[in-house]
Amino acid sequence: MDSALCLTAALLLIRPPGPYYVRFAVVALATCALVWPAARRAWTTWAAQTAVILVGIVADFPLPDNHIYLLLYWNLAIALAVSSGAPAATLATSARWLVGLAFAAAVLWKAVLAPDYLDGRFFAVTLLIDGRFTDAVRLFAGLSEADVLTRRGVLMPQLDGAVTVDGPGLFEPTGLARLAMALTWGGVLLEAAVAAAMSSGQVRRTALVLLLVFCASTYALAPVTGFGCLLVSMGLAQCRDDETWLHAAFVAVFVLILFYTEVPWAAFAL
Amino acid sequence: MSWRTAGPALLLVVTAAAQMTAARVATLSPWKGGGFGMFSTLDAPGFRDVRIRVEAAGRSEMVAVSPSLEDAVMRAAAWPTAVRLRRVGAAVIARERRQGRDVTRVHVEVRRRIVSDDGVVSSERLGEVVVRAADGDGAGVR
Image (cartoon, rainbow over all chains, first blue to last red; front, top):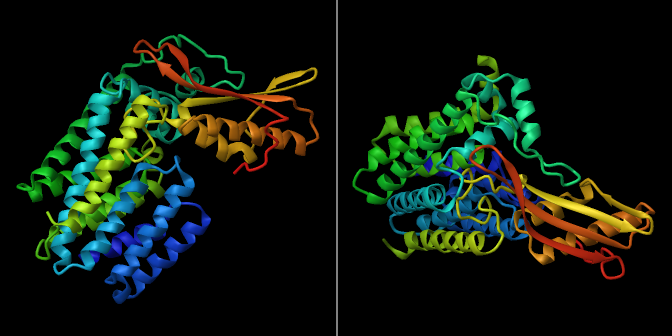
């Protein structure tokens, strides 16, 4: 459990949420937790962190990303677990439920509520308009940078409100369509598998391996470091003390996500 | 499952249910609000247009979002309620006055872009307000 708390503190140092006064408090508390084991084991540290993150969510509402909410629940779960008689088991159960429910909600959005996900439109457009995907699109879909910029120009807003319609061949390149469909179905099926495995509680190791696969693959493309590192911390909290290989795998994926963020690996591969 | 593990999980479920309701029946972007709808739909705040038109005697022009407006505009794009749209209008009026420009009213509109499955782009209005300079002088704008 201690390594999960260390990774959570490290994550809070790397990606503190909220406005400046919240970020300062988050970083100060996370530093204390990382440096002093007594502070790390004190429920007050994590309760204070929970309160500070909540202040940030309220101050920034409706702008905070979803993982900031998950970070709030996770810090609350830690505060409640370390004050219990069986901290490791309590935290592992909380982590399993939080990850399972978050993934279930994500699958509900993708498969039922969103009108433009399953047919591939979401990724086909997002791969074009989000500059963070440009290198990956060039690498995996075979489009040139000029192709991407031309199609992005059709989709992006105009200052005067004019709507540019009927972009000829917007989704025509087969490489782009294939990549979009692979990300669409690969993403939702993997998320559904994680949600189901976490919720069942009968296939703990399978659930953790699926979570590792999700984090190692998804965050290579999706630039959401905070979410990925948080999921890794919550996965690590579910490892038993004798599962050293699983511990090592989660720590390695935590570092891998930071690698994806800091190193433009797709550009190097072009 | 004890109350110590049920508490955070229950909080997640309640927040997500409220977010899904707000995104379905109101205009909250599915990407925001804690319902885990990110990367599920194109209806992200960044794919919504906030259009601002400033009007004065002999003047009617669309204006770009300056740094002083960014925060109010991002909040309005994420969930364009009348209150948030009026804040944008009031901030624009305050900015125009700071820069010595005449302004009688500001029209703020938020639209979401929709891409059909054959690549045709259209848009749908999510909310609009008109803020008169006499009513909204920027006081109280965050």
